[in-house]
Amino acid sequence: MRSRDTLETRFFAQPGHPPVRWRISEGLTPYPDAVALMEMEAERIAAGDADELVWLVEHPPLYTAGTSAKAEDLVAPDRFEVHATGRGGEYTYHGPGQRVAYVMIDLKRRRQDVRAFVSAMEAVIIGTLESMNVTGERREDRVGVWVRRPDKPRLADGSMAEDKIAAIGIRLRKWVSYHGLAINIDPELEHFSGIVPCGVRAHGVTSLVDLGLPIPMHEADIRLRDAFEMVFGPTRDDRQN
Image (cartoon, rainbow, N blue to C red):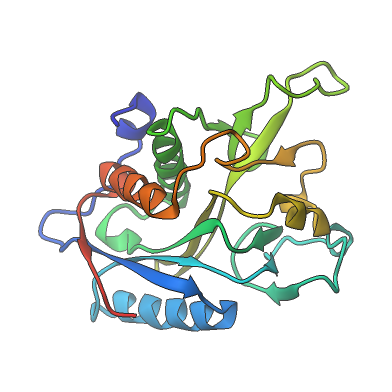
């Protein structure tokens, strides 16, 4: 996987820095536990006491509200737990079948450029999808990564329908990122109906399974790791949980 998009958005560390730790947790991780661990790890990384970390989890069904969330976009407030969070963005859903990657990267070791970092995160998602023959695309007026749906009716303005397949929401503390990205592998898509995902009403959401690609989570993880290394450089296994 060497798309031009990925190669142009490399975000490698400066020479001499160790590989990024790559951790995968089994089962469903409670959201408050994830936030507590992310904040602890981000502090350790900022202090120079730990290497950078990517942590892959799945969550039980829940909604999260970013710093730009609007109350009216929470359609079903009593359906699942709702967690206010310090990441950017609006409402999003997490649940089983969705791969969440929490990315704790020290921009001081790379580039202190938030826009470039977000572009690099998008490139990881696009590269992951590309390896499974799915064309993911950026949109200037919408966050996340989108896929065109020629199989669906066109929109009222005549444009092709598009669905969101991945979300990005980050926060920085002392130039260390936390929160990260979420790719829909095989979540229950109906669960997204309890919110207006990321404040976007005109478009829907999709998943790899919805697109006809029943790819196991462990295989998606391999492809995600390959795409991450193309953009951010080498990783090493981190088996601490």
